[in-house]
Amino acid sequence: MRRTIRDWTADISLFLGAAAFSVLTSDAAVTDGNMSETARIVDQSAAALGCAALFLRRRWPVQLAVVLLVSGKLGHFMTGPTLVALFTVATRRPLRVTAWVAALGLAPALVYVASGPDPEAPATESALTYFALLAATLGWGLYVRSRRELVATWRERTEQAADQARAQAREDIAREMHDVLAHRLSLLSVHAGALEFNPGAPRPEIQRAAGVIRDSAHQALEDMREILGVLRECEDGGRPQPVLADLERLADESRAAGARITLHQQVTQPAAAPGLVGRTAYRIVQEGLTNARKHAPDAEVTVTVSGGPREGLTVMVRNPLSATGSNEGIPGAGQGLIGLAERAKLAGGRLEHTRAGAGFRLTGWLPWTPPRDPEPPAAPARRDTKTLA
Image (tube, rainbow, N blue to C red):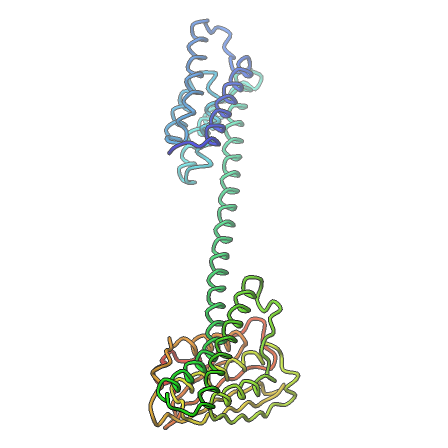
């Protein structure tokens, strides 16, 4: 591997540190007063080569440590580079490999102690100091290794959390864009289709349809800008969110587009409905009206909202199947009910959609007080969108 400036700085620093350690401890290392000048020069030269060999520690840390440990038994000045090599093994190699190298370095200590050396002899003090340095270096290396692994684990968890946050943000954007824009764009598509297939309609009807198209397109653009602006800042950050009381306004919008909507509100204390519950109920009704407009444009839609603080909130959207078939001019990806089921689940409720006889029914139940950590819904929504009406 190519070394970076940081790697070169560390390698040079360790090389100088090992050399300085060998020089500063040279008097204490030599316990044999009968060593000749030639033997001393050879020993020092070997130590210099050992220090220079530390530049190979990144590529061959185990081999270098073994060679220096064996050489240290024969010389007196090899302690510095040996300590650096052991530290490298402890920080960069698996624990099993580190244990074998540690056994090679510390096993002679047991043999030496078992031989009964003279406690007063200088050689005994020097040997015990040498083995203590080996043990301390291995312990320090293992500590650094564990700290690096802990930091790496934290970094990995942080990256995973960031990835999950980005994925959740994308899901929020997709869900919000679908729930808000699909309703208005379906209105626009219905009136545009009416103009296309009935170009000879009376002028007032054409003007009314063109006005609905213009208003729906303008409002869709405004909604899109608001959604993107809010999601760039924070969730629900200041943008007015729909509540339970807005259901009448939603029904009026569909009636203005020519739909037949019957809305029954049988909610106890509707003004006290929590924001999440009211917003989720609004989205359920909105999606039900959008699907009815797509797949049964000539059918009458009945919306029933009932419940209260004790029994929770029940939302039901029903419509018969269209006599003229689905409105093929309005495209759909089939993801609306999937996202809606996720919304209901986050609110602690559930969502069901069934085709009963000649009609279609979308039913949702929401607890009046959503739990902080909602459990999975008892009856999750099916993902088959072929029976939507």
